[in-house]
Length: 151
Image (cartoon, rainbow, N blue to C red):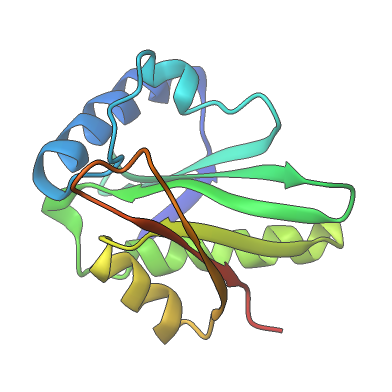
């Protein structure tokens, strides 16, 4: 059983190590942040949560404000050793529930080289709303795909 709970200060170093593993295995984030601890705690954040399985942090998600009535899913990742166990979907579902409780519209963006993430969002009923070219993805990604949560 996986528990989703608020991320505590004691979780941040673990999350940075997990993020490093995800970056090395799956290339997320495309560009490693100068300060990973700060990157995991966005300034416009509404909250950060971790997935815990067998007493171990195995995933992370943050929600950020998007205008006065929107929320964005950010910093969603799962330990490469724990993928395909439904943890990403649980974090995504938690985000949907939290946005609904806040009465805000939920969206997310993903770079076009994140096949597994894109498939997860589509299977969960998220709707693609557009694409924007990017110049910061190097040879890894060329555009952001925008999604809105299912209604």
